[in-house]
Picture 1: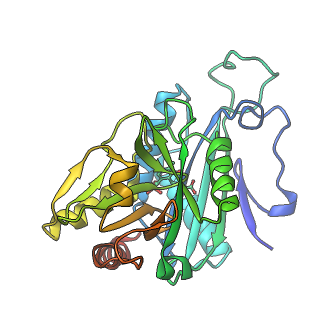
Picture 2 (picture 1 turned 180 degrees about the horizontal axis):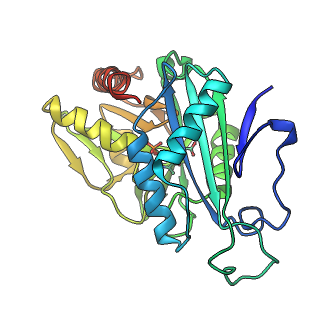
Length: 284
Ligand code: PDD
């Protein structure tokens, strides 16, 4: 049985308990991170911690654990659950207090939960086949740069994609793609330029995005960080998404139209390969 971490204890998943008054449960008053594990090691751990601190700061949420504490907990869970490849999920909420819209006193202890997911992410049938995506209106709140656990709309968008026979939804605001339901979105123009939306409160600042754009730069690809339209995406040479769970995942169909030849493209394949090599080399 899987061992999980809850507020200082490592427990079998069936024994872990959270209060019904937890603000994560009642108000989605919590933030999270998902870190990729390759060869039993954490990919871009420092980046995930940096973003966690930023999310906590934007919500004015106090948090006592240090990055070193969190690294120890991640590693201990990887060890206890024998994870070679997969994900570690970390969630921090503002803790538990009687239901009130006002935040509780500063000294209310956070709820901290971590668990692992053993998954084959490198050898992925979906990455090999290429994703089919459909576009769905982006009806999320306007602070998508904060990684909160408020994931109902992305979940609804993904269900809509599934009901339309697709693998994922790309969210669209004012005619421009913001990002995928749980990943950042990219196109490669017919001229070979990699285009992805610029950083703002409209998207999550992906840790994989940062690493993959560095790979693209080192490959001397042209990069434009700007919004792109649905029409531009449908007429692109290639498309792909990035995230800790999907790494670099080609997109071969958008709204039922084939992207380029309808097969995973060479730029996405090259970026996936380099990203993987670098991640394996730098994992901790
Ligand atoms: N999702 N955009 C959104 C809305 C996301 O939820 C995610 C990550 C990303 C990519 O960020 P990163 O490269 O740091 O994983 C972009 C995680 C994997 C999840 O919710 O499971």
